[in-house]
Amino acid sequence: MGSNLLERITINPSIFGGKPVIRGLRIKVETILSLLEQGATPQEILEDYPDLEMEDIRACLAYARSLVANEQIEIVSVEGAA
Image 1 (cartoon, rainbow, N blue to C red):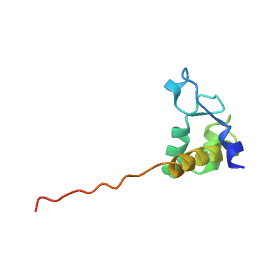
Image 2: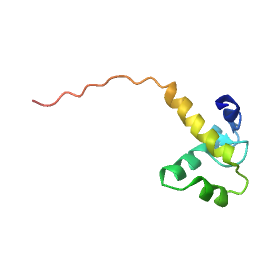
Image 3: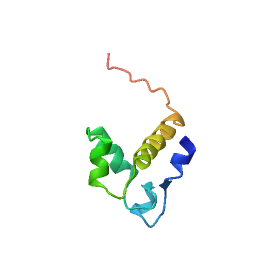
Image 4: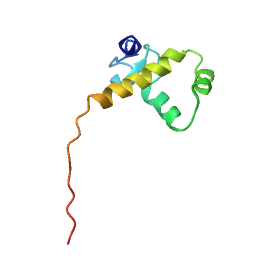
C-alpha cells in the first residue's frame, strides 16, 4: 500500500523548483508536514485544501518515512574544551 501512496507524490522542476508536491498540484509535501507538525488535524487540512484527499496526507507521511528509512546518520562526536 505504501508504494501506491508514494505515486501521489510528484516532482516537476517547473513547480516550486522541483520540490515534492501532491499529485502535481501546487501543494508541497513540506507544507502538509509542517501543518501536521503544528498540530493541525487531517480534517482541518482537508477543509483548508479542498483539492486534497485523505490519501494525499497519508502519502506525505509515507514520503517522509521513506526518506528517514533510507537516511544514513553518521556519528559525530563533539570534543569539549577541557
